[in-house]
Length: 135
Image (cartoon, rainbow, N blue to C red; front, top):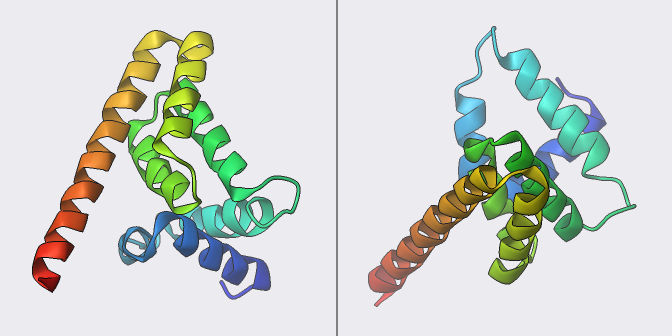
């Protein structure tokens, strides 16, 4: 796939989710799942995330709320990183999960809080490891 929309989507996907996450997803592409990766990159990231109507922060917080509603912790994990990369604060993420908990169910909200807390700890550890290596 070499469309301009795909290439724009790949750029945004990398900016939001990070190079490592996208590289890992694309390294697992085979004949079976290639169409899904192309769809996600072109349609979700290239067509929707590139629109002007909402900021990336707003899109991230909406995604976190919807993924909480769907109870999709793996996607919540990826999009917590994306939300932080897009400039959202931990407080905004917390408030999004609280709001979603009321309307989508407390168990789903608890899972999202648990997932986000693990992401924050992982990112803090990576930051500490990098600081130690640079010392």
